[in-house]
Each structure stands twice: as C-alpha cells, then as structure tokens.
Amino acid sequence: MAVNKLEHIAIIMDGNGRWAQTRSHARVWGHIRGSKIVSNIVEEADDLGVRALTLYAFSTENWSRPVTEVSVLFKLLKKFLIKERKRVLKNNIQFKVMGDTSKLPEKTKEIIADLENDSANNTGLKLTFAFGYGGRDEIVHATNRFIKENPGKEITEELLQSYLLLPELGDVDLLIRTGGDQRISNFLLWQSAYAELYFTETQWPDFKKEEFRKIYEFVSLRERRFGNISSSDLQNSKKKAIENKEIITNF
Picture (cartoon, helix red, strand yellow):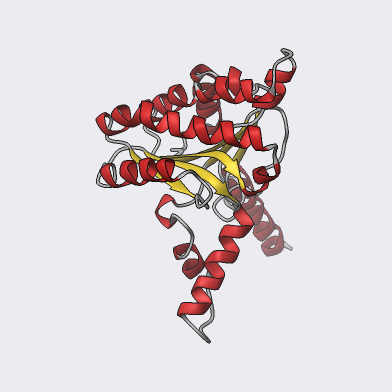
C-alpha cells in the first residue's frame, strides 16, 4: 500500500477549558497545561519530516471570551515565544504568526517580530501560530486586496491562493482536532478543501506525541483521491468497459 507524504498538518488544539473544569479547576488552568504540550508536538512533527505545522492558537471568535481568559492566553503566547526561541533557531525552524495581532501587548508583538525575522531564512519546519485568525476573514481580506490592486480583473483560484496570508504554506494535508468536537471552526477553510480530517476524543492537555505519530501513520495510509475514483475502482471500471465492449461487439 502506498504511503502518502503529509507535508502540511494543521491542528485545532481544543479541550483545554473542559479538561480543567472536569478537574474542578478554572478554565485558564487547562490553557496553562495545554501550552506545555505544544513543544512536544512541534518536535514530533519535525522528526516526522513534516514541512509545515499550523496550530490554531486563538480564533477571531475567541475575543468574546472572558477578559481574564484572553489575558492568560496572551501571557502564555509571550512565555512560549521566550522559552522556545533558542530551540526554534537551533532546529532550523521558520516561525510565523498569521492573523490579527493588533490587540496583543506591544512587547509581545516585538517578540513575535524578532523571532519571525531571525528565523526567516531557516529551511526546516514551517511553524505557524494562527492567532486572532478566522478562515472567512482571511478569504474576504484576500479578495478585497485583489480587487483593490486589480480593478476590473477577474479573479481565479490561483490568484486568490496567492493573496492568502501565507500562501507559501500551501494546502493542508491533515487537519487534526482534539477534544471530541467534529467541526473545523473557521480554520484554514480554503487550505483545507481536500484535507484529511481526524477527530480525537483526547483533549489537548492529554495529547501526546505518541498519539500524534499514530494519527500521522494511520492517515498516511489513506487513499487520497482529490475528487477522482480510487485505483481499485479505476481498474474495475476498465475491466467492465472491456467486458461491455466485447458484449456489444458480439451482439
């Protein structure tokens, strides 16, 4: 059986709040625990030879959450960037943030900009945090930008793709969501058109690199058809076409 190369993996890191609440803790405790999982998954993705890993850290809808929870998420992002900076640079990882970061504290924005600049020429894993991000917003933004720069010109799929926030990431091959819910929640809508989807009941704070590898290996064995029929169906179709031709000829 052929093995598919899963070059771009996206993860919706869900279940932090529920994980904490089932343990009689405040939701923010789940985010704190969940932030410690990220490094292991990034390391495993790098070991698997994944080209790009995009993590859904904060959506446009998350702004409606309690101020204290949003504040904790801001602090966790800053802490992660400071803590992981050396590891990112040492392992040749290219780091970027996609989305609206305008409401982040100025110091955090400086830390993001510094790491993006210092890792810009790295040729290893493309690690992207989707923060203040929404898939619909990205598509609308890309369309409006194209119209403004190309008045009267008709847009194509290829052109729209080139106007996305980070077009170099390409299409998503595998989209994983932890926490049990089975929806993609406005995440990379354009890029995930033909993504393989995998939903696990495991909540993000309990998501281990061993499970990540198992999911990768399992999905890599799926036959990806991209709208075509499977190879076995194709062979059967050819066989039936030959049989039908013989029947018509002998009629």
